[in-house]
Length: 206
Image (cartoon, rainbow, N blue to C red; front, side, top):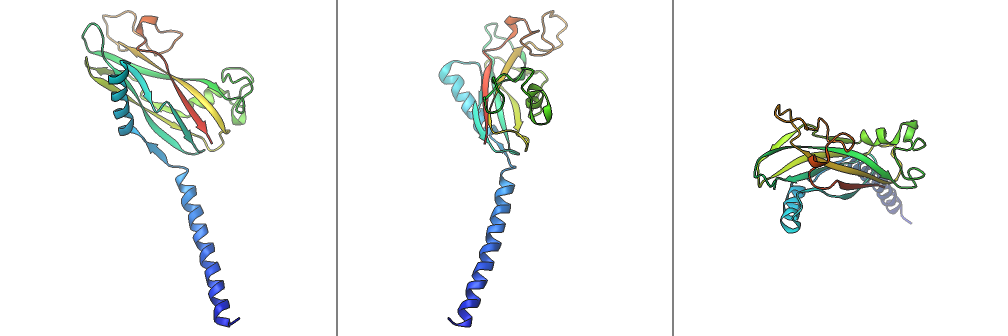
């Protein structure tokens, strides 16, 4: 075995080690990326409203994410109000369930269901979510969108996390109304002020 061959093999091994280190760094950076699905979501929601006759939906309704990663999704509201008028809409997002592997019993509101560090699971899941909580007007026969961001903390347990997305209408400080919901909340909002059905969103943390 010649000296030149040995030098070549050693050089190849060093280069391979450097390449693997670089790839690990690239993969590590990718896991923290937030995926922006805004354009795709809005297109899919418009198609869904045309095909199904629904007037409230969220896309995507299910998504898998790594710890530290995030997603930008959309809630869509089609104003097909029978009165033919523009209306103001707002949304709310509430944790609804977790898988058994995350918390025994699967109810994030139960006393024994806690996140890392002992925080109440509902409060913990609420820190994952950012969305527009204010009202916005949607003209009749048009579709309005609300951005919804979900970011998974690096310490989150692997498993399934479920949220309900609610929509309310005439959610403004209109002085002529007495039943305007200050917050789109099933405990305080008049039943006739919900828009469509609550939409489940399932996030699977790998």
